[in-house]
Amino acid sequence: MDTLSTTLDAVCLASQMILESGGETYRAEETVERMCQGLGIPKVDVLALPTGLMLTVTLEDDSTFSRIVRVRNRSTDLGRMDQCNDISRKVASGRMSAEEALRALRALKLLSPQRRWLLVGASALSAASFTVMLGGSWLDFAVSFFCGGLVQLVLPPLAKMRVPVLISSMIAGALTTLLALVSTLLFPGVVIEPVISGAIMPLLPGLAVTNAMRDTIRGDLVSGGARVVEALLSVMMLAAGIGLMLSMWGGIRA
Amino acid sequence: MSWPLQLLACAVAAASFSVLLHQPPRTIPVSSLIATAGYAVFLLLGKTTLAYFGATLVIGICCEICARVMKRTATLFVTAAIIPLVPGIGLYNTMLYMVEGNYGMAVQTGAATVLALCGIALAITMSSVLVGAFHPRKKGKPC
Figure 1 (cartoon, each protein chain N blue to C red):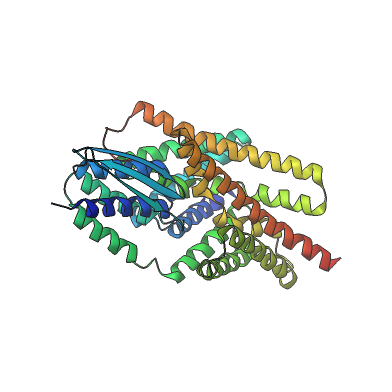
Figure 2 (cartoon, rainbow over the protein chains, first blue to last red):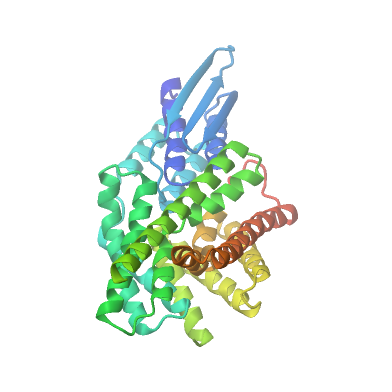
């Protein structure tokens, strides 16, 4: 039989990891409810926000226990979210005890992320393909490939230095624009419009927008609103980076 | 630009973007295929604001169906699948006009970009509500 603290640890860790890897808040709430049901806790009240999670469980003897979990780092890792979902599903159907779940979740948390160069390659290829999709030539493809790869090389060290996400998204926008502008000097055939708009595509907050909508229609207005603001701000900072670099370049050239 | 090349580029772009999102390997080809289908609809409908809505609706419904068939969450598929539709070029042009001091054009392009985003958001919402209404998940089953 699992102790209450192990149960609560497992439940909190699962929902915290879902929020950290970019899951919707209703998913985190459902995870808590499902796992508690599977682990034999009669009543649980939970409120998840993009930045934290609160829950109170009530036992048979009417005693209550509460936990608050803070979610500081939010990144996008759909694979991890999917695996957390899997574990919680197993707990809910009674195929896994709280202790086993806790062990599995901790192992998942320690698991190193995908190889860095794979991500750099993926970012480069996706930026370059978006450029072609938006009407770029093969020369634009090459420039955009370079831009996309470089941005993905720069972003992880910035995150490690604890640069706020909004600032690093502005830096990414500025860097992309600078590279594209410099490349027009080196290769006169480069058309700048598809290069920049293709290279910023992987940087746009697609997941934040989808999550914002999904949270809002579920009636989680606080989370939905917060995510809309997050998405808007990140787009605006990206645009600010592009605009800054364009106007600086215009100033130098004039 | 010929449309087969655009669709091919779209498929490659969506697939590599889903690698960037750390998607589980088995879902990557599905996302990429749905993204390409969605972009084809977008091109057929003529790249208007309504086209953004229609294409996203197709993507959303396909993703919800795939999620139910593969017993995964729809979020896994949707995120990478709608990315080709996000109006990056409009965003860039808006910024360009603003930098040039052409505020009239900046507002015009900016409004069109925001409208496109609203169309996408509305269609995502509608697709999940529509599919949910016709094919509800069993209670207790995760989504």
